[in-house]
Amino acid sequence: MPDPIRFYFDFASPYAYFAATRIDALAKSFGRTVEWRPILLWAVFRAHGVAPPMDVAVRRDYLLHDMARSADFFGVPYRAPAKLALSTHLAARLYHAISETEPSKAVAFANRVFAAFFVEQKDISQSDTLLALAADAGIDADAAAEGMTAGRPLLEQAVAGAIADKVVGSPFFLVDGEGFFGADRLPQLRWFLEKPA
Amino acid sequence: MPDPIRFYFDFASPYAYFAATRIDALAKSFGRTVEWRPILLWAVFRAHGVAPPMDVAVRRDYLLHDMARSADFFGVPYRAPAKLALSTHLAARLYHAISETEPSKAVAFANRVFAAFFVEQKDISQSDTLLALAADAGIDADAAAEGMTAGRPLLEQAVAGAIADKVVGSPFFLVDGEGFFGADRLPQLRWFLEKPA
Image 1 (cartoon, chains in turn red, green):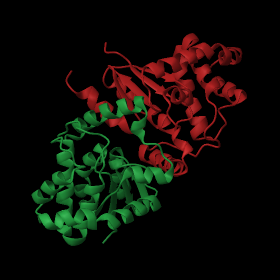
Image 2 (cartoon, helix red, strand yellow; image 1 turned 60 degrees about the vertical axis):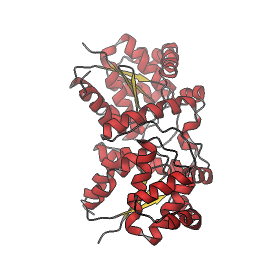
Image 3 (cartoon, rainbow over the protein chains, first blue to last red; image 1 turned 90 degrees about the horizontal axis):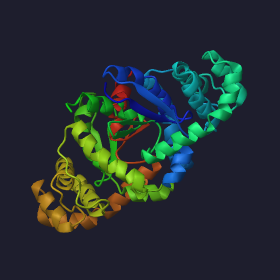
Image 4 (cartoon, rainbow over the protein chains, first blue to last red; image 1 turned 90 degrees about the vertical axis):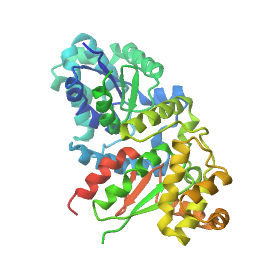
């Protein structure tokens, strides 16, 4: 069994959302699984000394337009988020807590968070929103409420792992030691997996 | 006849080199021509307040690896440049001068510069190197020597145009008012051209 593909992302990243709609099927076609690892991109950027790309007006304008166009290109539903950037630490903590206690529901929860943020224009920084999304994914209310605290050290570990793995943006894929940054690297990731070892 | 595709690039950008090997054929398949416009990316970045991506160690490491891997992915010859970054103002001035006086030779010169820098590890910041490359493209030696001065205002115009067109990196394609940044946006550029108007 080949190693899993590690999928680092921030829940506030539209490009991560686009990639999330494809990565499991891509991995599966090569007999691989995917380790979903939500992180806090700002914390990784801060550790590396990288300025957030949305800070510069001309790049922010480009990216906002490119996000909407890329959604069309990927053929996924998309409405510009109500807030961007916003805090994703509660969503990420909850993901990691679910991943430990009910791993079979974790990816469904992540996909539910993406849809809430990028299609339904919900504010995924709010704990009550996240509780409702967890319920949609079949997570018990008490477990979800607790997960937003219990997941804290797990998220800290994931962020430390992302820094060690030299993550430079979201989404970032690590496979057999090779890093691929961006939803636009999916064709190259496929090409890499197809190459004879 | 539909409008041409404007192709902004810096001669020191490997991703521009990869895109340069494809853009003319892509445009032609949609009945379009390509306006090649070398610029000085640092000058555009400075005007927009963008930090050069290679300034941060972790991103520089990622990009250097990604450049070599992307060359394989695009199926083009590539050897890591002897110097990176380096000054491309003489190459760009000469391109613009040739483009005015002998337009039919300009793209051949640009492709020669890319090959010299990204395959032959030549130092394209040097005027004697550029004179030899111009000769390879059939440009008279005196005209080439003069072009490195005469092209100055033309390059300044191109840089001002890039700033006005909100260029955010190299390569950058502008088609029917839509901007596409990166060699990895070529599939999306094709998709855009295929869409019914």
